[in-house]
Length: 111
Image (cartoon, rainbow, N blue to C red; front, side):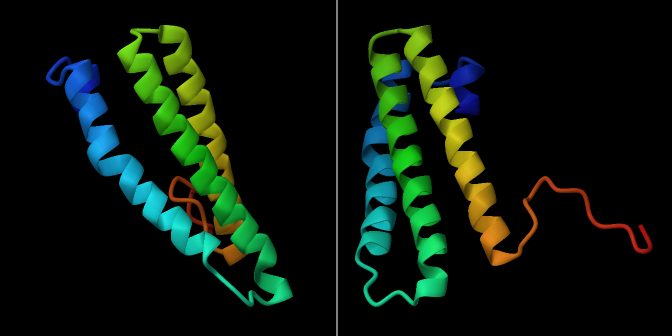
């Protein structure tokens, strides 16, 4: 995305990368989540959060392709909004796992 926003990659080239590399990888990851069977009840919220994360990621990249192909800043903004929702879902996964978000400040001892 950085190369695109800096003008070093065309919209067509970015669209091809998304369709060739990003979406298939997300589809494969989502299929692994969907294939989980016999999930213990205490892990079901984690699986549901992971499923939501992948749904939102897929939706945001597909929307981004539509925006790039149609040169639509509105659709691209929609894709960004969906991406932010995916990141919120990722935060929920990390919360369920008990791991801090990557951008979280380290805890200070005694605070």
